[in-house]
Length: 242
Ligand SMILES: O=P(O)(O)OC[C@H]1O[C@H](O[C@H]2O[C@H](CO)[C@@H](O)[C@H](O)[C@H]2O)[C@H](O)[C@@H](O)[C@@H]1O
Image (cartoon, rainbow, N blue to C red; front, side, top):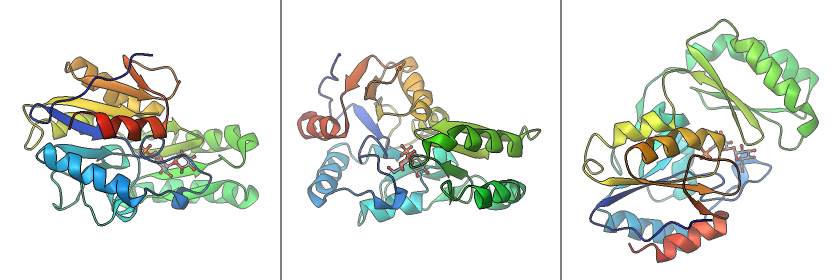
């Protein structure tokens, strides 16, 4: 496993996935958290990078802000369908929640029949969680694919014990490209840390840009650097040179 080298605060920009990278994966998506010293360290790194640190997540930005309070980093939420270009700025919403009303209706009977599946409604995305009901994984994937069938304006994505639907046209790679077009990111070399299949879009983009693509964990990846797990990510953040 090739570990990522130290980075340079003057020339690098840092992009961090949230679940499975900054926080451990747990059964209840509401029960994640970062200890205060970890948030302090992220603040310190963001300041050293002149603000060029963004969280790139499948989560809504409002949820990221709750977990990272009192900070409001630059962020891409819901895989880029929500965006805050610079720390503390306004959140832009690239889609409206009504686009998913027919999918909400189509999923309802399956949720009623399978109470161990849970729905996370992120407005511009719907997620079926089956971490605590792995035997229902195929049921969840099939109902999501069927509900979104025939809608080429939607995309179904699989993540870690989840299946998600949201409007097509955006992914973490495109979200990262958008960040790289403007201050405080433009002109810097991107560094991306992520653990899940949806992070592969960003890892591929970063590799193509000559940046540092870092996979967290052991899943297959286009990245040529690895960190072992969430604890290892925080260890690297402590010694990353920034
Ligand atoms: O892009 P990320 O920041 O990694 O967010 C991806 C999804 O994270 C959350 O689900 C994942 O974490 C949960 C809490 O640990 C876990 O229960 C679930 O199985 C994981 O897939 C979040 O709930 C999703 O909305 C995000 O898309």
